[in-house]
Image (cartoon, rainbow, N blue to C red; front, side, top):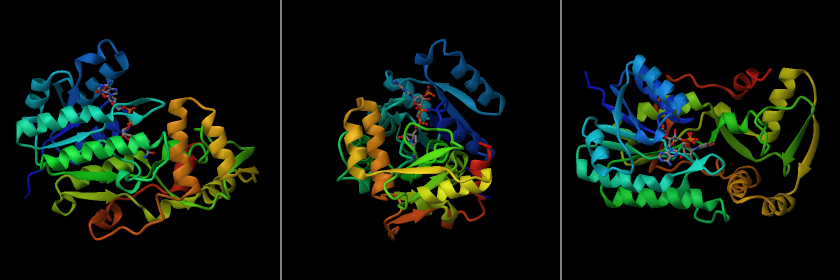
Length: 313
Ligand code: NDP
């Protein structure tokens, strides 16, 4: 029997991070979660960390401001998954991972590093618009540091988190589906990919001990979640038994509106533009140099968009 790797999850109390902790425990890995002293008296984070401990995780103290503490934390495990923040309207700390790369180099024992990616493949976004390209540029800076250091990696390209995009019927600024109306982005026909966050975590954990995913990008592309905005809206209309009133926003109007927004909002809107006006997630074939998660792990029963939408009824 192959021994399962010991995993350290960094950013474990975050939106995706807490799901990674759960999936790692469920899949039987000895699971360590970084407890940063900087969280201070954040009672929600403390309670969440304690709940992880109750479920069998080990809490390990460490800070991005204390190199030695990171090295000591890393020495206890085989694999490290980082899920630090990377959404400007919440927080964007992607470059902090350069400190983690330094610590991994010094620790010298890490068999696989999964940096905080989990979205659009930044390697495909060299021509992305300002200011949203900062997300991709920063993730590429981290990739270069990993590869220059010769650290074995897996990059998980998870496409759209369903909670952000399905809930709001793909409309920026919306997180719950209306029963009255919807604004279509362009013709609403560009295909996107909507993945349940718990499924992202489950696929991610499966990659860590898999030699097929070493030094590769793994795209999570469940076939039944590849839909256009119109198709998401149709599924919702079927569930509520009613047609929504539809209007549409041209690409030029979208970009003009974007320019009047604050920086963090503009970053997010740039991503919507590339996904829903350009179709950047689904307009390419996965090459031989990458893998697709559902093909690798067909036993994982993923969530279909229709089922995801049912929670909003
Ligand atoms: P969160 O905003 O939930 O933050 C995750 C964690 O980052 C926090 O819990 C915290 O870890 C850590 N963190 C935040 N600020 C700091 C700081 N100043 N110093 C150190 N650590 C900090 O992140 P998400 O789960 O939303 O994002 C994770 C990844 O997923 C990102 O790469 C992001 O780009 C991507 N993403 C993709 C989306 C998609 O649709 N594809 C949507 C959203 C995110 P701790 O637990 O230690 O407190």
